[in-house]
Length: 61
Image (cartoon, rainbow, N blue to C red; front, side, top):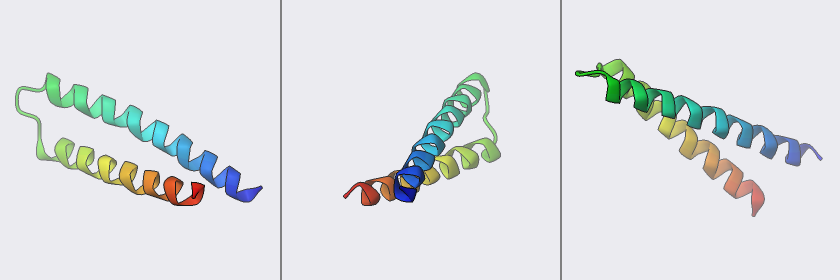
């Protein structure tokens, strides 16, 4: 079923994005003055995660 594959793909993307967020958090916590680029990347990742999660949620209804 293509819809099942799409949901699996979204869940895989969520997993990868969460790993990236963990790395970004570590970088921010390790740096005395984290740069704006790192903070912006973290915000973008968080927005992507929310968008993907909402997509999965709507497909599961």
